[in-house]
Length: 193
Image (cartoon, rainbow, N blue to C red; front, side, top):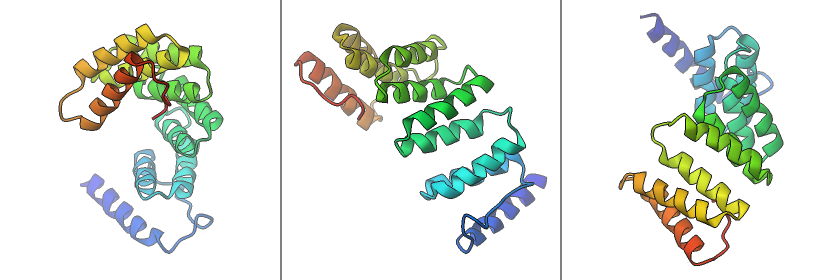
């Protein structure tokens, strides 16, 4: 019952948010999980400034938890601020070094900064943990190998990823088929799709 009242309070807060500017909006005292939920809603609405502020409050309230750092990393990645995204992903990994999603995201950040050996190290670390489903991680690895110029390993990883990708993942399958064809045909393409 306590959780229901929390969610009612959160819903009331959210309904009022449209009238409140970022400078006025502080959510101190809200439990950490609720701060993450509120930040997620802001992110879905495209309101990254409010999401950042709420996540900063979350970090202040529980600095040893990784989730808020990872979400901040996602926000900075979406703004193409790769150095700042890397900083927050690394902070998340300091708190939970076995988060395969954060490792994958950090691999993309490193690849975007042309730090290919670092990107490969992060994605290999994630793949070693055998996350399920595995195909998105193999897709990342294939794209890193492609960026590094190791076309045989890129093709192998992409083919394995495609074989593991369910039929209903139409967009992922199409991207992998495009990657495989471009490698087979020697066509240069932007690996960061």
